Length: 360
Length: 127
Image 1: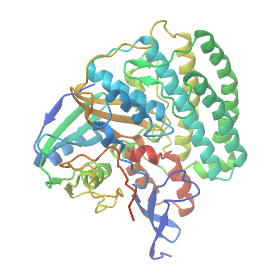
Image 2: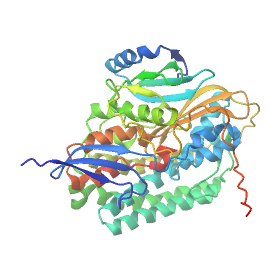
Image 3: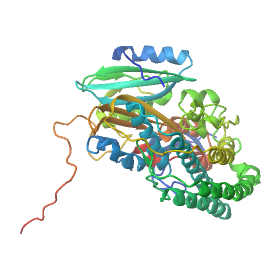
């Protein structure tokens, strides 16, 4: 029997949403016909501050675009300024940025796994994921001085070096972290209840993922071999990077990509620590940026783009950010159409939305 | 990375987007920035490692053709540009009518005669 259409508001405050986004769900009986998103609850207009802060200082503001991808935002911004000014950063700085970028990915994916388990009421799994994440944050704190906001990137390199003896200790501690992650991901990929809520839910075809603009694990879960790390920026060209790709296109595939990327990040960190070059971690910077640059990096949620325009002064003329969550909204709208109302919270979570990051 | 930007006419963006779509390119981003006169909107497309940028120069209040018929996901960029800069896109695949991003003032990124102050001094009212 076909019922009449009803609109159910989902969010901006909802138990599964750590940040506010609103969806108008048009439902017919228990089936979602379409979903209309609206954002803007945490829009801060950070980009417009670029003409009031010098480019060296703006690194700290860029880092505060997001509390999870903070390191990648500062690294991408610095990379853009360095591109504009033709600065080649020291190899050791590039390796350290790569290492911290991968630690960020680890803590972001573990955060998502925990939140997803929590959304299903699987509390012990949530605690386990966040317990492992704590050890990642401890490493970030020990090497940068910050757990959430690191403040370690600067134009021309990084502010802090890490002693080689400490790097060896980190390598040893990765073994324990890896063992714990194996137990954790084994539950995510094989538990009956989790599979019941993920397999076949929120299917995004490869073509839709490509043309609707999906990024990150959302795209790679649909079989797209898309990862900016493949371009070999920072030290990724030296570590023999290959993207993790799953073909299922459903929530399970997106979860599997994140689980496999945890181990890939550990491998990259190990390789970076082993091959860490000696030398300076900072190149002195003179002058001001001039011209236009599109700086791209792979955040835990996908490709982020910082557009920078300099005019030869200490202040940039323009700064615009395109984050992966913004470009993952059209695929989300597409996969919600036709799903069961009860599956909406889990499907929304499978794109790993980061609203603060999206709205800047 | 390609930083070359080709200037095109606003009336041609739909045709360019159609060509890009049939050529297997994905829409990477649409970027609106104020220019010396009016604004620039830059369309970036990519296929594997081939990144291409097309730019239109538009005056304030111009109605721009939407590329939603070629790229359904363009609505997030077009609605954002509408809500932050005040441009209207004709034929969007999903038109929020100015409610996509909730802003405290209309079109906050639109050019202003006076820039907003960095520090707001609040004076105590005298009775």
